[in-house]
Length: 100
Length: 513
Image (cartoon, rainbow over all chains, first blue to last red):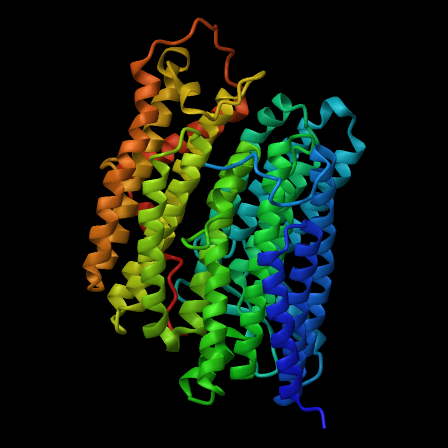
């Protein structure tokens, strides 16, 4: 039988993949996707804990996160397009005008 | 769990007046910027200023003794709205929220005053800028009132999304868009970590309301301790990113340098204040039962931020970047107040002292830092970026008043007596000593001495070199007003701080509740 603990383990795996993706990938779109994985891992956690407690509040939180994640992606892609127009690349290791 | 009660919802709205007004103002500004022709866009800035002033009045109307009507909030008490199933409010109206909202509005108003001229020089006079500043303040206001993780997270994201766009506002500039990309990626990464931490805390305690979490920790009904502790640490890491504390600071220098200068001022003051508001709320309410654990972590963050920020700032030739590292150092100083409260051992006097110190320093820092960035805006013209140390050469000859003002701002940042910064540091370092954390106070004083060196470099450039042979154009009215306000308050707080200390003390709440 599927239990909340199984969902939490899946969520931990997703979160780890997301964090590693942000740290290891150099393509900004892939980093953005990894961040989405982290947010969705948190959502899964909220739902699993809501199931375990039991309490609906966690599900409500997940709905709010889904909405803000959509907004975050929209702003992120807009910034990516602005960067791409300026330098025809979205590889973060080539974007190095600011340092010191 | 009860069902949805519309009358409770409607009654709660009375505490939401400032936020409702700011949201409306943001949409009005967006509409205006679309309706007005190209040459008249700067009037959107004027409307934004008037709107921010009205918002300040609406916020202050909750303060006792304010002539306008409506419900009042006595010092040290809290009114709440939007209760959850257990009756804990999700949205708090208390002195802390009011004081912090006024600081945010102040930072936004100074930013708008500077931006009118800056956007003209950059040929980017678009009304959306002012709307985004207002939306950012809306997010910060929700954050300052947040009493559960949903409210805090929504406020944080509202602020962050608006601020990302502001940093990348100069779409054609490679530096601005690069700064926005770095700020966005690391900010969203931090949000992800924060959110995962929140989900673990919810799992351990069964509530994401700060009062519910505190109750679960206090009664020992919080689930597995490791779950709670890991969750709390992840929340702390996410917050450390937002306030740019070492070792989670790496986005700050790039974002500060590349962002349009008024925005740099805004994110280093108002957005940082919002981060501290969230830290105070979460750690003094929700995680108060874990104070012994997080105080040690904060002490490490604080010492690292102070030392790293000030030492690396010495090496910088770009003033915006230098101020970014100095801002990392200042986050370290401000953490002293939180540490003092955390290690007070339940002594209410130390707690009051520490919290007053943090709130007072947020105010002091807003004036000094906005003023310093305002001077950089003044130097931006034609093809001169205005943010290198050599751009400040001979400023005493070309703009004597601005040079004198900049000197005062820098002395205030360094904490020299008779400026506001001295009073702020006096309270912060005093709080650390009161709480038996004298070693941190020593580290802080040593770092203030280091900071004097790089601030003095700018002063030396302004006064020790002859001005170049250019006839300076007169400073525009908005920028002059911003510099004058910052200067007057920096000196005023430095000489006669009592009213401002009382203002900061209105923000106190009985810690642990």
